[in-house]
Amino acid sequence: MSTAQLPLAVGSFDPLISAGPALVWTVVLTFVFLECAVILGLFLPGDSMLITAGIVMASNAAGEAQVWALSLGAMVAAIVGNQTGYVIGKRTGHRLVARKNGRYINTRNLQRVAELLHKHGFLAVLVARWIPWVRTLCPTVAGAAGMDHRKFTIASTIGAIIWAPVLLLIGYYAGSFLERVPWLMPGVIGTLVVGLILGTIFGVRHYRQEMRKPAEEFELEPTPSGAADAEN
Image (tube, rainbow, N blue to C red):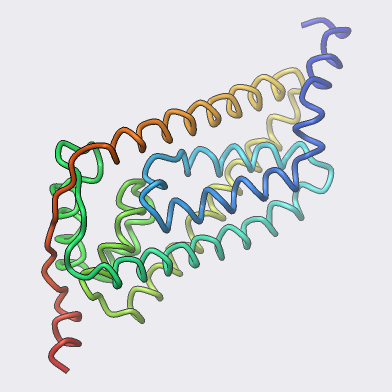
């Protein structure tokens, strides 16, 4: 790339970079909440979105302060999302709705998450944060299975602290390194943003296809703590 082409390439991403704080905050908080709260989150590119947001923040003059503040905001969004998912599951009761031949919302996946909670409880909620489809199903299944709310809250909060901030900061410091190679940064940001947009479009499309499939009820067994609470 010639010197004359470089300013043009960088300039083509100026609107994205200048809109950074407001746009990135909106996207990150919305995606994180949805991925931790409702079934739609199963189909959203959450991990790659956090890394992309961190890289975009590295292009902003106040990037370091912004990315640390955003890390805190994303952590809160994840905690609130988990609590929302838990309440949804609690109100649903032991019967959850699965989809026949569904890719994610099927009885097999619900059973796998339920078994993880039965066997490992606190640790399962903690580890679930790093497994995309489990991350979304876990709060609802935990609520439906009657997992102890205090135990769930502590585990999901610790998970939120070490998930969103870590991925955002990985993206930010990777972006800071890319800033040393000016001609590379626009291409990386452009590729990641396009990938994120396409991933979201295809995700919403797959979600709609999944929800059109016939529903079937799936009944959970209460977790050991849930069964104890019921007896009391």
